[in-house]
Amino acid sequence: MAHSFRAADPRPGIDARAPDTFAPSGVHRRYLGSIYHDGDHCMPHSHLRSDVSVVYMLDTGDEDPDDKLSARLCFADPRIDACCPDEPGRVTRHVIPVMTPGTMLIFSSDYLHSVNPYRGQRPRITLSWNITLERLPGRPGEGWM
Image (cartoon, rainbow, N blue to C red; front, side, top):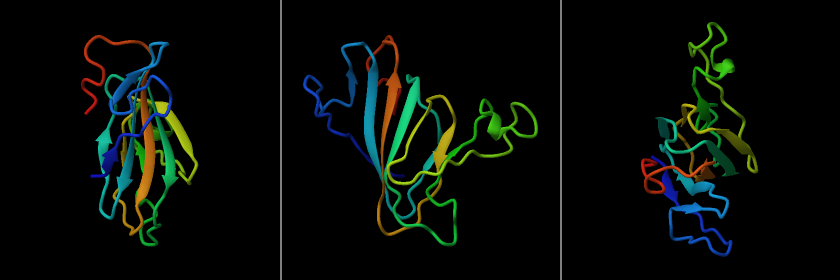
């Protein structure tokens, strides 16, 4: 599994030590970074208590000449039409976006997604955010891990 860290938020009034913050508008966000080393991956998942997810590619690490899908972000969700080209609602294909350094991808937090195993010596590094548009009952961040 990838190693995660919390990104510091330089804006005044945001406690960078806290894993979850609310903006004055009431928008809740959680932000973190992921460092993938050889063999690291992320199992299929979606994000609870979040409306929108964002991933920003800092460094793709090393390409694997033997596996073009190494470390690739994959979506396999029946609500994504491109995943269901043969029959609506039945996943028969993955959506695998190209993520070069500097790419930012915004997607619905409830889409099922994963990251294939990484094979490389240099770390693969991403930053990500989960954003909730309205305050939810319960403790901030509850159910996110």
